[in-house]
Length: 71
Image (cartoon, rainbow, N blue to C red; front, side, top):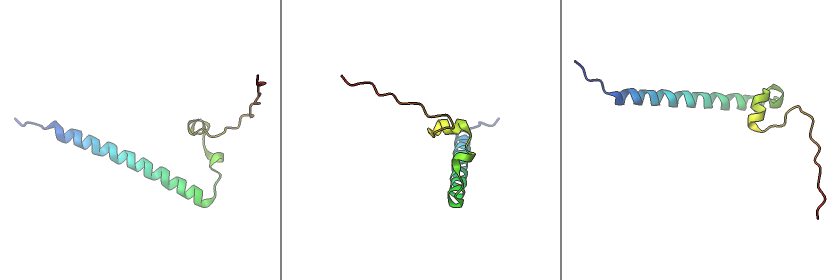
């Protein structure tokens, strides 16, 4: 009876995905700004898996660096 246009459905999905992305980005920036302005120790509250993703040093003991003799 009615012909449904899938173009509108795809456009709505794209708008929702974009809105979710920008909402998450905004909240991350907001929380980071508040933490930076308050002088909070970010490393103290950051989970270990986030530290490894960001490349931050963990609580592990530092490994010894051995230099090989140069020929």
